[in-house]
Image 1 (cartoon, rainbow, N blue to C red):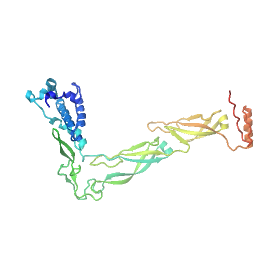
Image 2 (image 1 turned 180 degrees about the horizontal axis):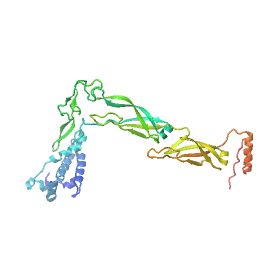
Image 3 (image 1 turned 180 degrees about the vertical axis):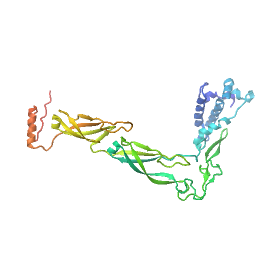
Image 4 (image 1 turned 135 degrees about the horizontal axis):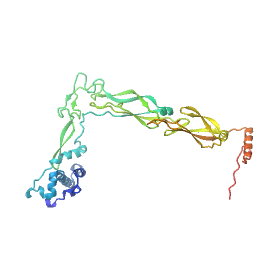
Length: 376
């Protein structure tokens, strides 16, 4: 393409003339990914667009070339007009970074380097009280551990592994990929040793050359006071063993809490519904109320209505993060008596007459309240 036909390099990358180096690099990476020929095989238009983007970046990413371009435009690199010309070798490193993950190369962590062990997840169910006050539980977990026979080498006793001749023990090899501008070098896991950097000729019979075995272990878990249903705790370093000297993973324990027969929980509060007789509600009474700490006395005042709520301070759930604990809330529920004797019914009818309540006697001698007339 003649210089007169070339688009402005800033326009090609979609950046302003005062764009920073970081903005130019970001724009280039996005466009290079979009138009890379390996993603559009046989598409000549994408290939031409990719070349245009790469050329623009090769100039604008170099401070000296960018300065010349800002002064003289495309003519700065036209040899026929006294320009210096340029190549695209400077951008191959960036291409390797961008497309390494897409095509198996690029800069990456050494496959035979230290690797952290996997985390393990398990669950446990505890009682309402155990969740409130904390407890210690023994768990059975299955995890990956270092092979006890080969000590993690993967080799049979009395043998050693051979350093991979292709990668010289690094686990990675350089590979070349052809691009529109030449050969791009990338790195990837060594195919001969599969990235471990060594070749085991006589594998350990116990672990079959992997250097690790699966074992079931019993571990102790300290469940903190105040934990709620569905929450998890993390036991550091009790997961699977790492590789190549890497740290051990963690054990994540999800806690389930069994429902309580009389208590309910809302955050750090304990809820209790207290049955109370009509006489106790009307005249007041001293009640015995159960809590997670044991029974306590509660004074119920006269004329207590169904739904009245009483607060027992600091009789709730301990705060899982910090000192103190929540409260218990007691809701009064007036219970209507059943299976009354005739004498008891007569007493209630007398009470109804004394309070001006009309209680007619039904045919089956069951006291039925008279429906009030609707006001017009």
